[in-house]
Image (cartoon, rainbow, N blue to C red):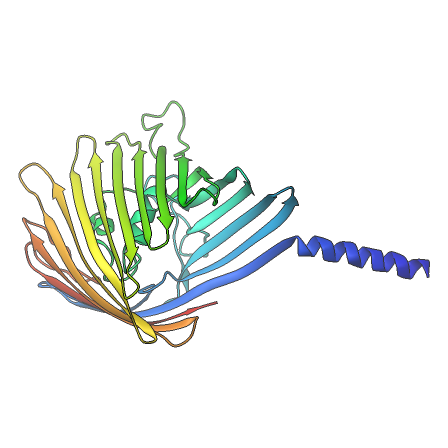
Length: 348
């Protein structure tokens, strides 16, 4: 009888502990047939992440009591067209490691959460990236994505940063939200490039009802020239459609400066939605100001909550010496390029 009571007590305690913790396996598998047409060479390929980025992840949370919790998030990028994993930069300075194996390059963080907000440590998205993806109808995926990210002027931390310390405001602030982040290049103190890869960034915004607006600022240190970025964007839900826009500016000390914007929208249509955008980016350099303009149109058809078919067509026009080409094609300076995406996305 005593053994039975002890066993029941152990099971009850175990059940209580399990109720306070949870671990979730999640992911996206997105396969894309992509075709690019350029004035020099065309390209046809089966690739991935034309609608959502392919990934495999694990996330979990533990209730610590008193309104506090601890959580983790490990998320790896996948190239499901060939079975390899995505590479990852470890020091915010451009070089990648991982050899194509499974690396948690997309996010690898541990957090402490409470009424004070969230403190998050590890590799994570940078504040300067969020406005570019949230206020882009194509979510910075596929051939239709904003020209700002295609420019490359944002540097290695344009999307994510390793070795970061982040803070997020608590959720209940009357619609206001924000985050601050400090990230490190982790170089030797006596190295000439000791500050390379170090940076700070801030994002503040307001979301309430149909409106969502945000501003982001960042600076990343490099011996070759610090990169300062500023962008702001917004979205308004009209009910029959969502309209959105963003503006961005990148400055490299002693180097090129760039400016760009996007306007676009999402229009529900039956079981799916139409996506459309116009984006442009101009690089200011001595003696030349190359500019690329892109017009993109796409449609997503939801077969279920987790599975969707999609297609996108985009055309870029180059001016003043620009030679951007789409989907891996090659085009000459001042010539145009067209790209097409056809794919299927399944999430779990």
